[in-house]
Length: 282
Image (cartoon, rainbow, N blue to C red; front, top):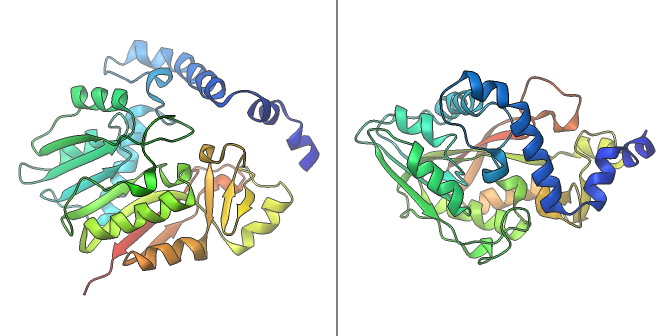
């Protein structure tokens, strides 16, 4: 079975084709598949070939994840929300529609193009801010500063709720640790963040070593895993104990975790693990 997986067309493409070409081909195929929806639904939708939007229907996925976020962090209409890696605003759209004029939304992303789209399409009664993070990421942006030194656009203990969807899965270990530290800095005591990531448990190691997992993460350092160690920012996972140690150092505790189906087989649940972290009070 591992040999068959290794020699599959998909595996060969990921192994030998340039990353930019792989991403473009996947996005183009998704855009073409979505053409009937675009013709029947007049609402604006960002093209994946231009904006690297995640999978699933733009509106349905955004609304579904917003509901999970709202419930997980007990979101109030007057809260201050920080969106880490907000992209084109898939989550900003329902969040800003939910917050009232006493609320505040701030999002940041490394893509200026995505932020421009969000600024044009996201609206609501709350205060809305989009910030460009001039950072490099081998998967999405070649130029810019190192992510591990980035300071979030928020004051200390000023954020009620934060979210990070499919962000930690593209951060190297030093950046992931720094982002958790920054999250601990900006969250109010008792504030929460909902994030998605690939968190490797001890019981996952057997399926990973045998190539049985849907996402075949490979060890590339102490507690760090990657789908392709040559291009680690494509998909990165972290040992649970390592991730928890970073969270603890940041003043965060893991309140809940819902496993994703990246381990396999495919289900109706999310692909990545979903975690809620809470800023420790006192």
